[in-house]
Image (cartoon, rainbow, N blue to C red):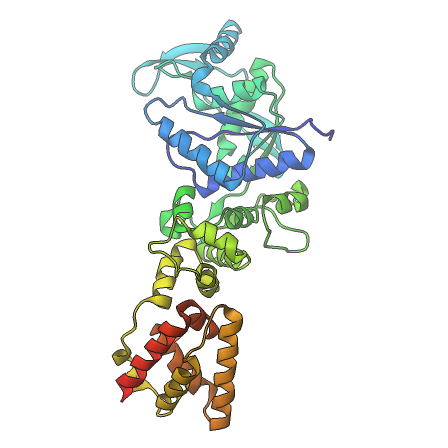
Length: 430
């Protein structure tokens, strides 16, 4: 196939928010075009006057941009192409292939009467697909707008679309579209119908399975790289089994359409969450800080912003986890809630920690690690188990039984605040 010959399109309807199934279609078209050095066209199928809104269109375009899925042409809007559809409808009428009749609501609509009602078309993933018993269907609705199948065929022909990549749910539409291509004397594009995306239980994917819009995932703090990387694996496989990609560019370099499949794919929200957490952990602290700014509810500790981000990075699965994790790290602690469960050695541990913090400066993680190292060495000399050292200290500083490595709470809180919290914990025991 010659470079530049391929032209694909993504054609969303602005009747709702962009969902992950639509993103997969947009992504595979994007990758297919990049693989062959072809063109990517964006077409807005907004002929449903009652449900299409400018707000939905703008939201969808914003989501596509956030995901990094750009286009070479468009957006073209079907609502602005009425003359093109009128000319195609007139051509079919002149050939005796269109007639007016009442639609289901008793209104007058223009119908297509195919010369043949059965046939076959070629699908690159499924081979020859047969169809039969195709009845007359609407070309132009009673309100004068083109029906979906008619508008899609006219536009794909006019825009020189060579390949149509979309979900298996469109197979029933393809039979009608093929008949329209042939009636209009236009060359059919090559079709690739991707397998369905199913829920973990094998049923149709829905919101109750964690299938939400892109905007919802974005608000929760999913990274575009995680969404793109995960969706790429729903209908495509890497030759070496690779499952994580740094971004769209890396994915495009390793993507090969020969490994597309027609089998259904399972959407697992827990797997997406896991991949998102791994992408967060791979970020530099300064980059993560920038991404967290819209999610933060309170200022980070002044002068220790990057330390605070590093401290919560390991536990974060989505960016919206940050406020909770930060509260758990720096919020005031009431030592009375845990004083009764501490080992007897805790009084000595707290006294030694207070002494070590006196007049000390904890300017960075190196200082904090040095402090923890000294406390570990002291505990070893005193015969105190590591857990009986670190667990009481963690409770005194954060009130939590778990969390980041011990040096982080010291570094984020600073020497004075750490010493004060440990002092209060010691006094609560006594």
